Each structure stands twice: as C-alpha cells, then as structure tokens.
Amino acid sequence: MGNPFQPLSKKDFDYGAAQHLLNRAGFGGTPAQVRALVELGLDGGVDYLVDFQGQRVADEGIDFKSDILRAQTPEEQEALRRARIEKDSETIARLERERQQRQTEDRAQIAAMKRWWLARMIESGRPLQEKLTLFWHGHFATGYRTIENSWHMLMQNGMLRSRCAGSFADLARGIVSDPAMLKYLDNDENRKVSPNENLARELLELFMLGEGNGYTERDIKEGARALTGRTFKGNEYFFDKAQHDGGGKQIMHRSGNFNGDELVSILLEQPACSRFIAFKLYRFFVNDAPGLTRDGAETIERMAKALRDGRYELRPALRALFRSQHFYALENRLAIVKSPSQLMVQTVRSLGTPVRSVDRLVEAGDLMGQELFQPPSVKGWPGGRSWINTATMFTRQNTAVYLVSGRTTRGPATGAPEPFDAMHLVEHLRTTTGTLDPGECVRSLASFALGGDPGHERITELEDYLGSIGATINNERVQALLCLISAMPEYQLC
Image (cartoon, rainbow, N blue to C red; front, side, top):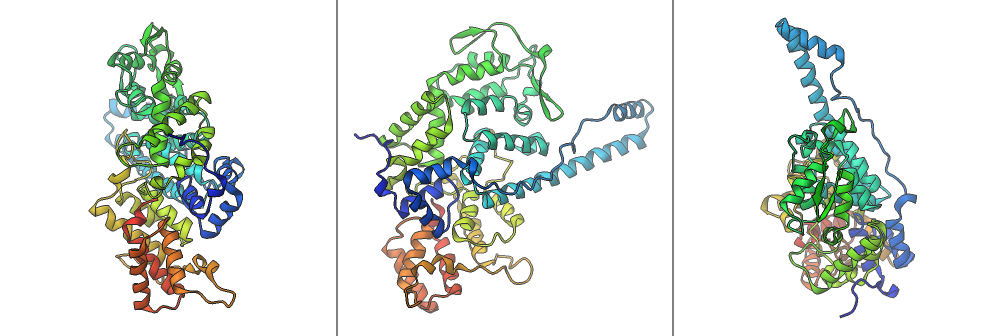
C-alpha cells in the first residue's frame, strides 16, 4: 500500500481538484476563481488558502455592546437591599424591569451576531479562517441559551478565530479560560470543597481525547480538582486561588499539584489526543461517511503524527492534508453532506447569487438544524447524514431556489427580487462568434454546480428540461437550470 498522505502530483491539480479544494477548505468559488486557483498550482493554491493572514478580512462590522449584562453597581445593590428590607415593591419592580430589559436587549444582540457571522462567512477573503472557526465552534460547543450572555459568546468566537489555524494547545488552554465555556459547563461553580466534573469530563471525552480513549473516571475526578477556581468576573477570566484545590493529584499516571493548564499539557502528551483531533479534522474536511477506509485510517495516523511532531501546530498539518493524494481521491469527492451554513454560503460564493436577506438565511439555517451560537448540545452538531431528513430537505431546496431566483414559498419579501445575472457561469463557453452551445452549457453548469461529473442521466434530464423551455441560452434559462440542479440530491454534497 502506498502512502495516501503523499502530495498529489502537480499535473493532477486540474479544474476539478481546484474546485474540490475551494469547496472543502472554504465555501466554494466562482468558475473564474477556480481557474485562478488552477493557475496558482497545487502548492500555491493550498498556501493561498492556508496562509490566510495576508488575505482580505471581511469588514469587522462589530458594533456590539460588552456591558448589556454588566454586574450591578454597588449603588444598585444597595438600593435593592434596602428595597427588600423596606418591602418597597415599586423599587423592586423597577429594578426587575430594568433587568428584563437588559435581557431582551442581549437576545436582540445575539440575533444580530448571527447575522454578522453568516455575512462574514459570505464576504470574507479568508474562507478557511471562517470555516475553521465554524469547526471549532462545533467542537468546543457552547450555546447562548445556557450562557445568556451575547458578549461572552462573541469573545469566544473571536478567540476561536484568532487561534483556529495556530496551535491546538493554545486553543485548548484558551477554552479552559473562556468565560462562555466556564459558564456553559458550570466550572464557575467548581470549588475545592465540592468539585464540579462537567468541564473535566468534556475536556477528556469530547474536546481532547475522545470518548473512552484511555482515561478513567478517576482521571476525570482528579481533572476536576485541577480545574477548581477557574471562573470569571464580568467579561474576564479570573483564577480564584481561594477556591483552587492545590493538593496532590494523579492524572493519566502522573502525580503532582496540577492546575488547569497543566491538566491540558498532560492530555496533549497522550497519543489519543493527536489521533482524536486528526480524526475530527478528517471527518470535517475529507469524508464524513460512517466507518473508515484503510487509506482513511492511514491518513489520520499520519496527520496525527504531523500534529505531534509539529507540537500541535495546525497549519502544517492542514497544508499536508490539502496537498495529499487522499484528499483528492475520487472516493472523497462529493463525500461530505453540506452543513446548512456550507449550503447557503457556497451557493452565494460559487454561483454569485445575491445574498437576498441575511435575516431569512439565518432563519433558514435554524430550520435546517444549524443555529449559529447554539449547537444542540456539548457534543456539537453531529453532521454527516444527520443534516438530511424530510423536513430539512424541503428547506434546503427552497433556500437554494430562493438565492438563485429570489422566490420563496411565501413569495418575494417586498416587490421584485434583486436581479441575478447568472450568465457569468457560462460566459467562458462563448465561441469566437459569440454563440453558446446549449448542450455544452448544460454539461458545464451541472458539473460546476454539483462539483463533479453529473452522469449521463442527469445531463439528459437537464437537456430535456431546457428543450421544454426553449433551447436558447439566456439568463432566465440559466437560472431555471440552476433551480433544477439545486433540487438534485447531489447538490447536498460537496
């Protein structure tokens, strides 16, 4: 057996391979962008995506408040204390109304943050950065409805983005100091007299080693002791030394007076850690089908070794993965079910459709099962085939049609939909005499929109449909073809 982690031959980095890379290491691109990536070649194309620091950043657009849910001032605390002593119901009611008003404002702010992040995925010149931020958000899963603090969710989002392709060790240490995670898993209540095991358990089971991978219940209990005292004040991490258990602990066959950062270091030393992170990255970027092929298992082992050898630096391991033969193997093309975010953002970025309404797209994402800032549990989004069911398929197809045509089951939002010139998808096929061959346009559109060979049956269906509406290629007919293509089961894959 050869080494599937070996680089793809540079001559094999063709249009299909470049489109596959753009879809997986980002959210797709237009035909012109795919051709530009082909010109860069395998190494240049991978470097362009992975070394994203020099690329355009989406307009930050952050105009969010950090103090909506601020702690009460000493004066407010005193006023409430006196009101309770004096049974001043009017003052108590006023303070309660103010609290509820702040909560309402915070819920409005998290809704605005959802719109901001989805727009950022669409607009960013650093697609891999946003895709990795989405990956780590599902890996280190926290949800707003438990935390109820939009600013803490935004701080975590920023931390994940800033470290997404750097060191996994830094990510893990960041997450055990993150106010949103500390609140979500109750570590703000983890005290030496009554250790709370939630964060320690998920750190071992879901974040670093994987469920059942070489640890015991005692390791979890001792890990909880190491994490005692890690809490937050306001918007900042705070180590409460008085609540930290500084006694001796035994974790993963190591003995010492360990703290939270040292716990993370011990877990990083375990072979299971690099394998688990390599496996999660593989499922996200290469193939999310149940089970692993022999080449898939070999690729994960080699990626895990690259992580260990590189002291958990993610960028070199990702660069090697995106250059590897296995990444481009036919069995790994169209082998991942698009997440709702991928489906929407890729449709806009690849086809060049208008965004239409970010509000509607956020709503559609929720209906399809991917509410930003609210994974369903600490396990994150299951992904893969779980994205697809009878309810979500209806929304997935309608959302793609909405982006292409502006039409929804409820009709256009107001007036005529924003126009979409889809002809750019076929202009490169125009002959020197200015004509477009309908059959060639059908084959090119289907191959591009589906990200691979659509097969003879699909081409025949599209040609028959084009014949039924008029074979001349114009904008209206290209849009009609795209609506039909987006309803095909293959469109759900990337």
